[in-house]
Image 1 (cartoon, each protein chain N blue to C red):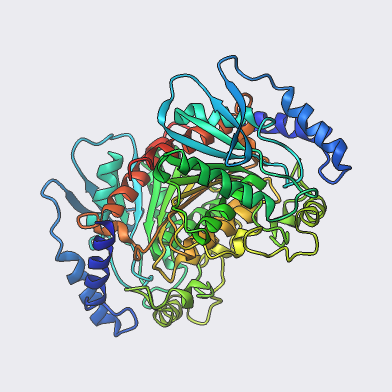
Image 2: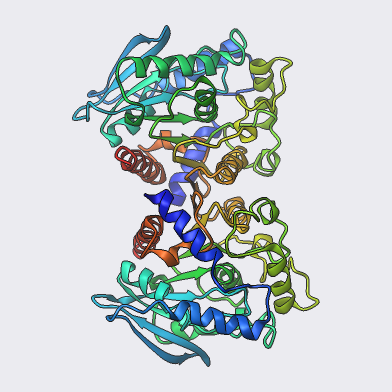
Amino acid sequence: MTQQQRQDLDKLLRNGPLDLSGDLAQQRAIFHEVVASAPLPGDVSAQPCQLGGVPVVLVHTPDIDPEHVILYFHGGAYVLGSASDSVGLTADIARRARVRAVSVDYRLAPEHPFPAAVEDAVAAYRALLGQGVAALRIAFVGESAGGGLVAATLVALKDAGLPQPASAAIFSPWADLSVTGASATGKAALDAILTPEALRARARDYLGEGDPATPLASPIFADLTGLPPLLIQVGSHEILLDDAVRLTARAAEHDVPVTLQVWPEAPHVFQAFAAILDDADHALNSAAAFITSHWTT
Amino acid sequence: MTQQQRQDLDKLLRNGPLDLSGDLAQQRAIFHEVVASAPLPGDVSAQPCQLGGVPVVLVHTPDIDPEHVILYFHGGAYVLGSASDSVGLTADIARRARVRAVSVDYRLAPEHPFPAAVEDAVAAYRALLGQGVAALRIAFVGESAGGGLVAATLVALKDAGLPQPASAAIFSPWADLSVTGASATGKAALDAILTPEALRARARDYLGEGDPATPLASPIFADLTGLPPLLIQVGSHEILLDDAVRLTARAAEHDVPVTLQVWPEAPHVFQAFAAILDDADHALNSAAAFITSHWTT
C-alpha cells in the first residue's frame, strides 16, 4: 500500500511541470499554479499581514490553543515560492499541533540576495516577541530552503541576543549551499524533484559571488551550540538526504537535542502529500507531537 | 535539574574503577561487580537457559504480553560483560515494552574472536524462530558492542536467508571497530567511560589480524538494505557519537526506516541510569514506544 503510494507520488512528481533549473519567472508561476491547484480545506483561514515590516500570512484552523504559535518558513530554493503558496502544508502542521501559524514571506533572490531572507526571519521573530509572545511559546517550522533558513535563523538569533524558541521542526532542509553531500550525486537518479545543477544555480542566485559555505546560508557549517530541540525529517529518495544527516550530526556534535527521522523512498518535502501518502500523515503527526511536547519543558 | 543529574552521573562514572584498556581478567571482575552492585527490582526474574546451543538469560517482569519478545545483546566491547551483568537494563526496557526478553550470552573475545559473537546471535535467533515465535513478534535491542552486534546480526540474517525481526532499538552502538569517527578524538575529553585507545585494543582482541572495517564487525561499512525499522539512541558526550551518526546515515542511504535520537551531554549507554537520570527514563520510554509501535506493521 505504502509502496504503491510512493510510486504513484514519484510518477506524479516526475511528470510535473516544475523545473527548478529553468527560467525563474516561468518557474515561479508554475510553482504557484501547481501548489494553488490543491484546494485548501474550507476551515483554513489565511490572512496576509505585516510583522516587523515583513509580509506574513496568518494561518488559522479551528480549535487551536491561542497561547502558542508556529513561525513557518516556506521552501523554494530561496528564489521562488511564498507564504501563500505553502499555506496548505502550514495549515496541516498547525492543525495537528493545534496552534496558529505565522508564515514569513521573506524576500527572495536574486532580487534580494543573502542575507535578506535571514534578516526578514529575525525581524519577524523579533516583532512576534515584541507582541508579547514568549519565546518558549513559539516553534519554528520550515521546509526545504525554509528548513535551512530555520537553522540559519536560530544561529542568527544568538548573534542578535534574542532568546531561542521552544523547538524547531525541519522538513528536508537545504542546509549546504555548496552542494557537497554524497547524496547530491548518489541519490540524483532517485530524486523526482531536485537536481544538484538546479541547486547550484539557485545558490548562485542567493549568494552571488559569496562563499556557499557561509554559515548563515549553509548551517551545516555553523556553530549550532545553544539551539533548541530539533526534529529533522527527510526522505531517502532525496539529493538533500545528506543535508539532513549532516545538520543532525553538526547539532549532535554541538550538544543540541536532535532527532533525525528518515522515511525510506520518500521524496523531497513528502509531508506536503499527506492526502495521498500515509508516511506523510505519520511524519506530520510526529512533528506535531514533537512541537507540543516541548511547550512545557 | 537534568543538568545537575548529568554532572552527578559524569562524576560517578569518572570516579568508577572500570578501565576498559586495563587487564582483562581484572576488568571483567570489576565490570561484574559494578553492575551487580545495583540490586535488581524484586519483581524481575532472570533465568539462565540455552537457546540453539547458546547460553541465554530469560528475563521476565510482571504483566507482559506473552506473544512478543525482545532479543537482547549486552555491551562490553566484545570482551567482557554478560547477559547476567546486563539484566537490569534488559529488564527495564522489557518492562516498559511489556514483553519478555531473551538476553544472549554470546561468546567473548579474545578466547572466541570474530565472528563467534555474530554466529551465536544468529543461532539464538534461529532457535527462537524454531520455537514458533514469528519474526515480526521479535525486536532486537542492544547496547554498545551489543548495539553494533544487533546491526551486524541483521546483516548476517540476510546472508543466512532468515527473515528480519520487526524492529531494532540500538543504544550507543560500537559500529566502527576501525575507530575512525571524528568523535573518537573530538569527544575524548568529554567521554567519562571510553577512550579510543581502549577501543582499538579491544578491537584487536575481537578481530586479531582481521580487517577492522569488515562489515559484520563494523556495520557502518555493511550493505544495510532490507533492515527493519531502526531506532538509534546516543549521548553527545560519547566518543561513539559518530558511530551512531554514521550507522544512521548508512541505513538512510540504503532506504532503511531509521530514527536517530541524540541526548545532549549524556554519556555512553546512559539508558542504564534511569534511576538517577531523567533523560534515561525518557529515552527508554521512547525506545519502548518505538518497539511496540512496530508489532503490527
